[in-house]
Amino acid sequence: QLGVQSITLPGSGHTSFFFHQRLAATAGKQGIVIFQSSGTGGLAALALRFAPFGTFTSVPTILGP
Image (cartoon, rainbow, N blue to C red; front, side, top):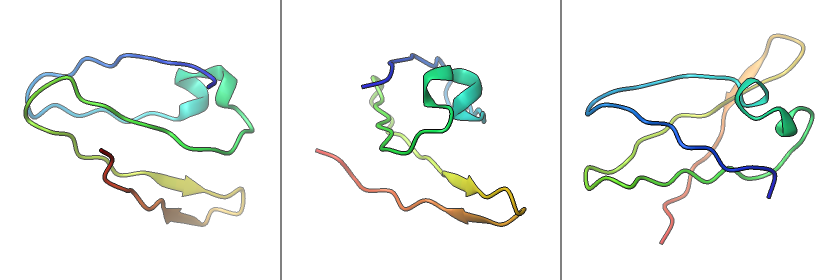
């Protein structure tokens, strides 16, 4: 585990960020990110992976327990 961080959003809120800017320990690393919601409304996420060549792809998500 490289780090834990809380992000507070209002209902129907959204945010976007680069992981290495929010969690410096993730710079240059590969792995799995786990998002958890403490609310009852659920959580939706979209992850994109960018290559130095300007190409990008979406990252598949899985539904956890």
